[in-house]
Length: 53
Image (cartoon, rainbow, N blue to C red; front, side, top):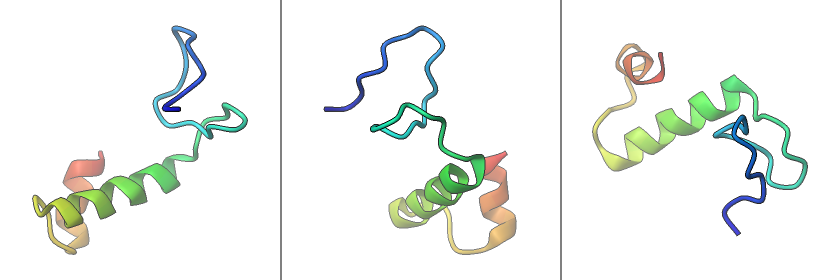
């Protein structure tokens, strides 16, 4: 199941069990890791900040 929260104001990044919003730090770190793995970014923090702002 992708999500069970169908409200118009639901968060993009939520805990699937509780529906609570995932902290900004956690999802920004995850996006940075995803971008590194997908190769549009490297491990330079200054470059990753561009993608996470």
